[in-house]
Image (cartoon, rainbow over the protein chains, first blue to last red):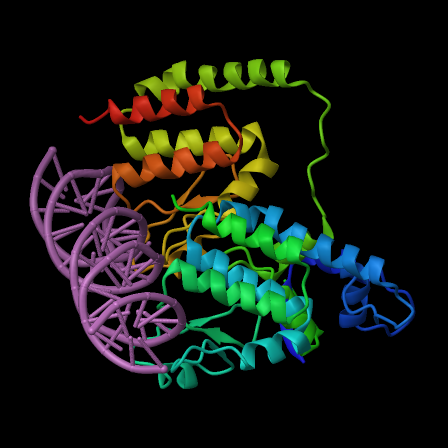
Length: 170
Length: 170
DNA sequence: GACGGGATCGCCGGGATAATTA
DNA sequence: TCTAATTATCCCGGCGATCCCG
């Protein structure tokens, strides 16, 4: 369990959403944030695709992402979103991704540092992962592309993301 | 401030939505829960533009502003006007604005102080915000410019403001 | 932490490109 | 040897905050 601090008004707001006596904060928040709704096998592929679309569309059009002009920050933001979209799939994609010597993603800074000479690992915020950052833009795009593809994300979404990065050359 | 306990995964999810270094949990949650979201106005673009013009024109030609010869005071005056013009838009623009280490605007002095070594925060009067003041004029102009641009203020008005600051070199 | 403002200069991060390896 | 793939050096510009000046 983690502890977070919130202001009084927000606390009251959350408390007011209690569905049953003794419901804990995590449960209320999960319901309000609509996360971790058990995705049952009954869900058809269309709704899953819609969900995927909405999730990434939200990020790509968010103030955070749009206002962020640096390539690395967008890169890290996107990796964070990919992880949170599906940690298990992300994990599989991440571990199998590497260059000829360097490991691109790992759960600890050190293993990235020792896999190359000057990898400059960066923390992927909101995630247990670290990424290499000493690469050119082309490779950053390649990393995103590989992960998305390995996670089974639609071609359309992948192309859209690539487009955004490519069009960012100042 | 109230303290609540949430599980690890949920914590990571919330942390992943951080817009900028040092953003507090309340701010993230308020955004996610869409509390205090501005109500969309039906004002058409023409009248909005007129209104915008009048508001800023009034400030820029006011005695307070014109007679104020120090750059910081004008800087703060302008930020105050921007906030009061549209607090919701200002807030979005402010939270996504930062340098490589320092946060430029925040609702509390402390988070500005801890984001750099000697930021010299100043209160933006008539506003819940604080700004960094330990910057050169160019950066102050950049801050104003970014905020105005992110708030969707017209190019003309932005240029006019920049002009005023630039012509103030002694 | 107490003088305040902000120009100047030096550091550091970003990432293109040269170097190296496959 | 030539080319493609990958690494990581190193330059440039952005940013921070020291320090000088009023």
